[in-house]
Amino acid sequence: MDHEDRIALFLDYENLALGVRDHHGGRPFDFRPIADALAERGRVVVRRAYADWSYFDEDRRMLTRSHVELIEIPQRMGASRKNAADIKMAVDAVELAFERGYISTFVICTGDSDFTPLVHKLRELNKRVIGVGVEKSTSALLPPACDEFLYYDRLEGVDVPPPAARRSRPARPSPAEPAPEPVVVTAAEEESARDVDTLAVQLVQTVAGMQGSSSGDVTASALKRALLRKDPTFSESDYGFRTFGELLRHLAAHNVVELAVGPAKGDPEVSLPEQGDREVAFGLLRSVVVDLAADGGAVALSGLKDQLRRARPDFSEKKLGYRSFLQFCKAAATGGAVELRWSPDDGDYLLTPQTP
Image (cartoon, rainbow, N blue to C red; front, side):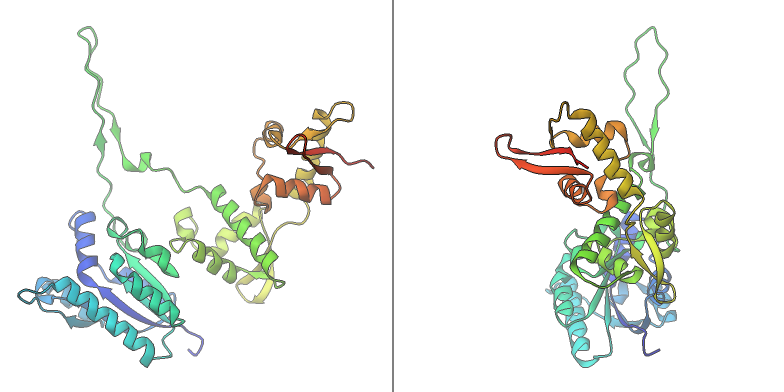
């Protein structure tokens, strides 16, 4: 238990309940998916929800059964009930951060950007902050401020209503043609699926950056934390994987990364392949340069990447851990595949095959 994170949970209940009602087809807010998600992250020692509970009588019973402390913010004449709840919640969170040093993580359940200063202050006090909000009612300012942000709609156990199908307006038929059937277009068809290849590029770049900035090995847990710092809304489940380890094993099977036994069970070391695809890519670069360089001439860097993709359509220097094509060519030159030099006259880098 000493190694568990102690979590304090604060719910801006009106924001959550109204967000779910407005964007989930009038369905009631369910606290259980949030409780389950936090149980996977640590031990919740404080649970508080803030609202004028005269407006949420049924919800009150549901939260009480989940051992949530209900903080009453009554509506007062001439006062803003919303502001009163926000201020009370912020004051309580900061007070708890000072009085309960053993609490390491604060969970702020709201989509309101007014809580962004609170998030910054808690992080300044060396507390980890997780945000939770309804996706369509969450301000774009709030997720980047958090260490991790969970969209309520994506949590396990949340029953999201299917998107309403939209009917495109049919063209007016000519007298000689029958009226065409209206085309039903769903939001799922319009929304592009999350691309695992794009995720692989981001992950490889992150591993390469971590290897370059420290002499230590990169573990899976450290890599996950780095990805969350880049994008607090990142979740491997959005890409169809149950765990981060499953995602890494998938990428290792495709030779994107290599996994080795780490310092702790279930936390493998992650590295980039030193040979294999990189050597193949260097060889591809050299062969293309040889084909293009006539009679000992040189090939300009500009446009060379397109030539490589004609020979190998799936080529991507970013999948190999390089942030740019120039960085890839410099590595190939270091590896002896080509020679690379800057030409002031051409205003470009020139590549020639490496002489034996």
